[in-house]
Image (cartoon, rainbow, N blue to C red; front, top):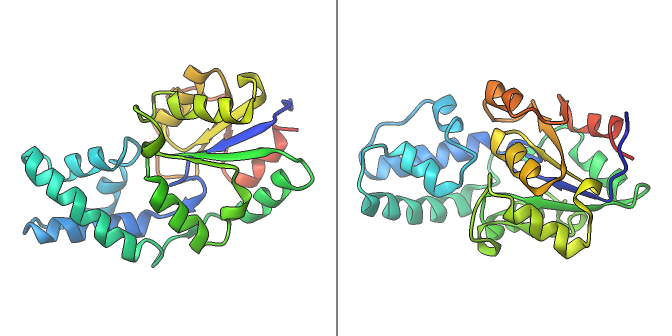
Length: 218
């Protein structure tokens, strides 16, 4: 079955970009500034999906909010300078963006819990910023995913009926946000998110490679 779609909405980390190594490095660098030992990479990745503040709160479990606030500032400073050291596009990302925005004439957006400033910086650095009509991050919303606010903003800005939009994400929070917004949903099983929770979120479709999205939309 193929569905008719006007607007394609992507999560960023774990869907468009493979940023795992740089997020892990920035988190452990920040922990080191407070004399905390490094955490295993998979543990840090399990903290992704609910925004940077939550990632650091989990990474500094038991610490004061004051320390977490300091860590947040230091993390952002370090990550800005190192965000593109090991980060790259997942396979076929540029191919599918070219097709979506070219021959299929779709609107394409990102709704992410990463800041818009960092998102712009990374997508520009990787040479794909031009493909996106909208980048929605914490600066534009009051509530992060799984709240649907960011997706609803995309629908309003692009004048898209929810049933002619699809949200693609690698975590249950992405799928929950899409469902709450009334869009179609697609789970990216190749990403960072917990696979069991992603399956339990019951997306409409699941893909093991971003190019498989073309099997489901027209």
